[in-house]
Image 1 (cartoon, one colour):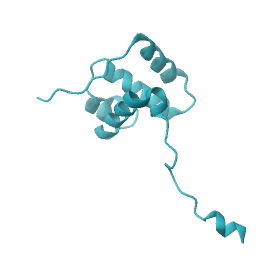
Image 2 (tube, one colour; image 1 turned 90 degrees about the vertical axis):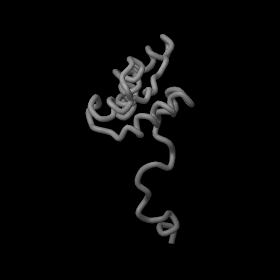
Image 3 (spheres, helix red, strand yellow; image 1 turned 60 degrees about the horizontal axis):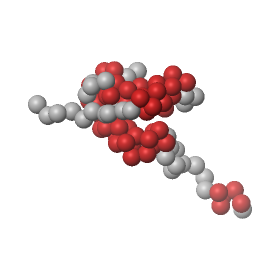
Image 4 (cartoon, one colour; image 1 turned 30 degrees about the vertical axis):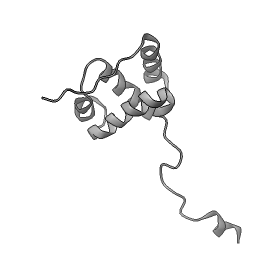
Length: 96
């Protein structure tokens, strides 16, 4: 059986994730922090993705959250610029 990836957190990192899980204004940050805390408690990311979150996620999504947290800390969990729906009309259309 393959070894699942885990997450080693310092006390400060754990406290930061707990605070944001409980108080962040954006639900997506609360969900991502909760997932990371579950992984830190030795739960596999695939199990967290499939059955421990409010909404089922692809395991690759949770693995990506873990990688982004390791690379950039809490800032890595934010939605990156350029994501989401693009405007229906270009700005040039409105200038004419």
